[in-house]
Image (tube, rainbow, N blue to C red; front, side):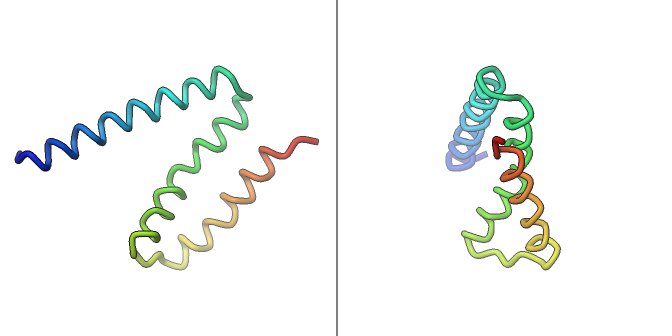
Length: 79
């Protein structure tokens, strides 16, 4: 591994640990149903980041965004 690869590895590892710490904090402080539902959208977030960096999504990916967004809205909506 060269220096650049090690730097990326360290950055990714650090952000992974930070993300898990934030998730556990949210689960401890918030409603588990809401936190777990929002946290499970990580695949959609990764797809949005890929689109933002120039990748072209397939039709299934685009169609898949609708239920994800709808699900987050429904779960976070308080009656």
